[in-house]
View 1: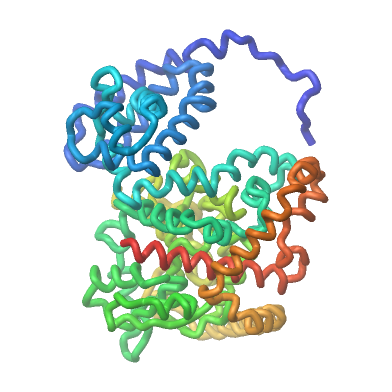
View 2 (view 1 turned 45 degrees about the horizontal axis):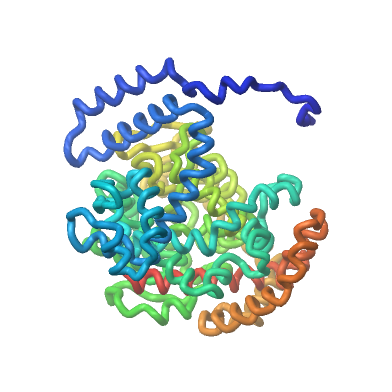
Amino acid sequence: MGSIPTEPKEIDISVALKACDLPGVNQHVKRIAVLNDNITLGDDAARLSMLASARSLVHALETPRETMIKHCWAQPAAFAALTYAVDSGLFTSMAQHDGPHKVTDLAATLGHDPALLGRIMRHLGAMQYIVETGPDEYKATNFSRALTITIMGAGYPCVAGACMEALAKFHEFAKKTNYREPHDVFNSPLQYGYKTKLDCFSHFAANSPYDMQFAQHMGAYRQGRPSWMDDGFYPVQERLLDGFDSSKNEVLLVDVGGSFGHDIDEFRRKHPKAPGRLVVQDLPSVIDQIDKLDGEIERMGHDFFNEQPIKGARAYYMHSVLHDWPDAKCEEILARTTAAMRPGYSKLLVNENCIPDTGADWQNTGQDIMMLTLVSSKERTRAEWKVLLERSGLRIVQIFDVGNGVESLIEYANINYNNSIKKCDASKGGSVKVDNNKGDHEEGSKNKDNRDKKDRDENNKKDKTEHEENNKDKTNKNKCSANTDHKRQLLDNKDDNKDDNKKNNDDDGKTEDNNKCNNKDFNKDYNTDDSKDNNDNGDRKGEVNDYGRRKLLLILMMGQQ
């Protein structure tokens, strides 16, 4: 095993004072020029390519020292100034008219110290978030105007107040835990940074208004993102409707953990002639809150850690469900779905970020680090999705994608009914085979007709056996689930959170000693009572309650849309 050398190689300081890649500048400039000549209004792919080239040009021109100062001084200061501008109403005041604004006039309107306000606006101008038009005079930009929209601006105070300590102290947490990937929602950089025993979503709820701001921020995240239901993304007719058994009153699509049913309602609107039943599932406390959903969509209270009550649906759909959970919990969720699927007919559709093996997009990697530090989870790579689902008896049929930074739709089938893994770039209208096993896989009625009875019986027997084993292994968990069902309700979460937060405040005097603790002490001090025990019951009890709190935030989010 390697180790850091006791006398590492010294790098000459001159490296820090020269452009990072001066020879590459010409190449980036030429590429931008070519893209500029060919870009058209509405060509988002060309715009994104030019933007990536512009970023590469900046990196090539900057010296390491300039980049370091930007990271350590300019960008943290800009984030603080932007949060100030959003939280104080500065940007809202500037958006009232398009002309220049004097600092003294804005200070009088807002009731701020003009000296303080002038310094904040000076840095915002230097960073080009607003435009300097004269001495102590500034004009709004489209960016600053956009941040006056509630969902667009809400992320700044939320991240600054409820997330930043987890990021700032991540290096300390990593060192104290021997640089191991965290997998416990109650023992993450967030608990370490904020000296709390609360999970992430309880932490938000206990520190209002961060819960509402987080929900609003997630509303902004969804804006302008392509939907898999749009033409050119996922071939709904070919992959779902063809081969659907419409002879009976069958279920076409089950939206598992679907909150208020926005996704499945979008499917109904975009595919109004699709046959079969549509069902949205979520915790009963969430389903009971739905008041704006088409009557044709069935509502079902269901906890996805329990047995899936709908058997043999054409497709089970999960949108941003699995990224909230570490692998072990994902396997529990998936086991319930797999047991309900009809081999050779049912599909699992996972709508999540699917990070490519190379050339990852900064939006995905940034979100991955946020998941790491806040909830000990992750945005998964293509390889990780493959491994995770195969452990649950599923295999990738095809990955549908329209470009980096956009959530993919991953289609899964029972493992013995799928013999190829493909990556489909819908923006190019084609498929690229990633891996190949023996034989060719065909979907829908072809697959069903060609399959002989022997294989079908063997797989049904296997599914039944696996289901029985899962039920046997999880007996204690199901008992725990029944005994703590009231804890999954959302009504008492706020009071519980406040009590926990008060208890944490009483422990503030121990902060200095806690900072000096070793890895063993760290785990002892920052684990909650629910997660102290390593038995499944204690672990599940806390995490299921965490899921309920996540749904509370989704309720808040949907209320803003």
